[in-house]
Image (cartoon, rainbow, N blue to C red; front, side, top):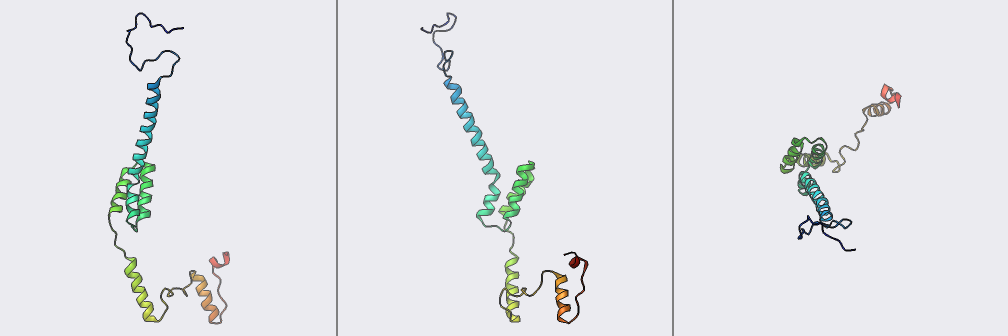
Length: 151
């Protein structure tokens, strides 16, 4: 059965008009372009959004974790000042206070005759346990505090 053209239709139809029941190629192409555009814009948005984190990570900044948290806050709250603050923090070099203090502590340990890095090994983490240990060393019975009795 031959497809007949309606008498009122022009004899030269554009290429994107198809006969009934055939695949609309233009619509399929537009769908693929639309999906590719959505994915491309999404990837571009996420790459731009993670820019402060990548800058801080690449330059091995001390404040990398803070920059990462600011980036997540900006992503989930849509408050752009967090992203700007993260970018500024990623670009700024904060002074390293730990290095000189560590060198001072090492020098003081050396003067005191303690092995480097072993200066705080004898200091207990729990002050109540330290007081009980002092009482035992002095020959007294340790006094139980409320915190120690609860354990």
